[in-house]
Length: 130
Image (cartoon, rainbow, N blue to C red; front, side):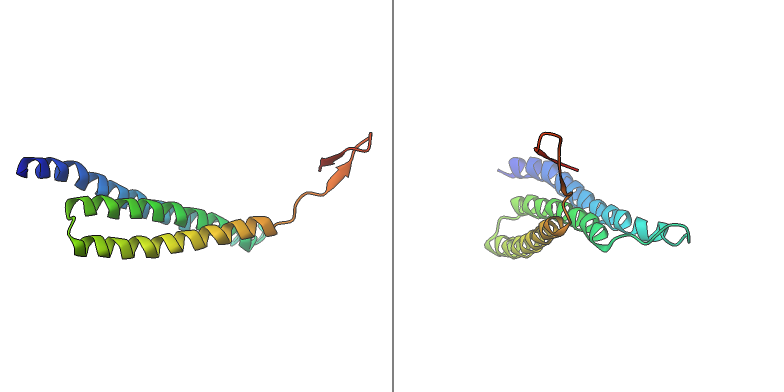
């Protein structure tokens, strides 16, 4: 059993570390991507960005980054399957999942709140999107 645990540790630890790195990098890149329109707007000839677009950019990156971080926590629990570790993992997953779901819910709400293109009536009375 000791050998199997060592092999499992050799496989899972780098994967968990990689998932942590990808999650943190995704969140960092999302913050930069969301703030990029504001940085560009420092020039006087460029208008300030719309806040919903900035929120959407940031929210999508946060949701994706949280998913990677949850995956890393699940992988680490494989290495230490004690009841206490499983309980801690459950709490972490619950908090991150609630956060990810609330972000996703707000993103979908913002997308629905955006004005839709008006329908234009065509030559034969059929409506088509503008």
